[in-house]
Image (tube, rainbow, N blue to C red):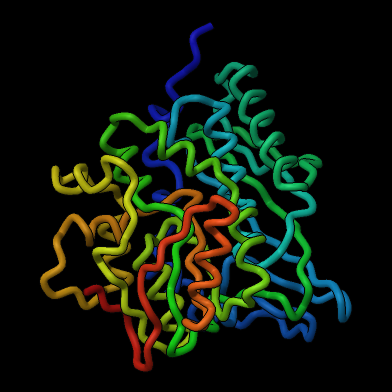
Length: 332
């Protein structure tokens, strides 16, 4: 039986399908989270995952992430969706422990398609050192898949996005442009390779350096997530335009006018100071990423050692800017 074209069943896939960041802020404004002494990370401020302290040595990290297909191959979709959800735990400094599937599919889809999604997700969960233990599936005209993930972290080892400090160096652990490359409908092999790369190895390399702030770059784009880090840390982030790493074909697609639905929403949410910066670079920075890399802020005197560690482990790392006193995000 010929496999259905999954992306033909969606209005928009991957992290580009995320709810507008500005509308989400408006929705949650005034929401008062439960007063719980052991809730170390919740909605005030929000982060990549919730963290709840069990005792002096252990806390649990809990996250959920799902989206419509951004590729047609069911197994690739399952692997990407699983990677994206698991990476939220790594972004908090944690280690995944247990996952549950969150699934919605048209009843008319062949069961072989769903089985391929689940099997590939299971493989990726196992690769992250966790267990896929069940889940919940409903009928829906638009397919969607993802995971709810529980992990563990030491209460003093949590990586917030709100801890960046003036004098920090800023790093990125994956190239940008997944949304642009997918929208251009050319060769997506490199993009898929990065979208199915867990951030586990990068997190392991970063951990000994005690970063001040970490977040993963997903649907709000690099500039959107840098905006969150700057605002919640009460600092100014300066991004070096020439240092931004791009997937093959991403900048060319941007020059050709390719944009995803997330581009406009991300620009509205996170305006940046960018006089004289080429439009294709701005498009790269605002491009909604799926299963993107870690955005890391740590003291500049640790930068050379971090770069050396990543080289020794043969891992991708790019220094893309700095943290200063002030506010907002500037691109120069």
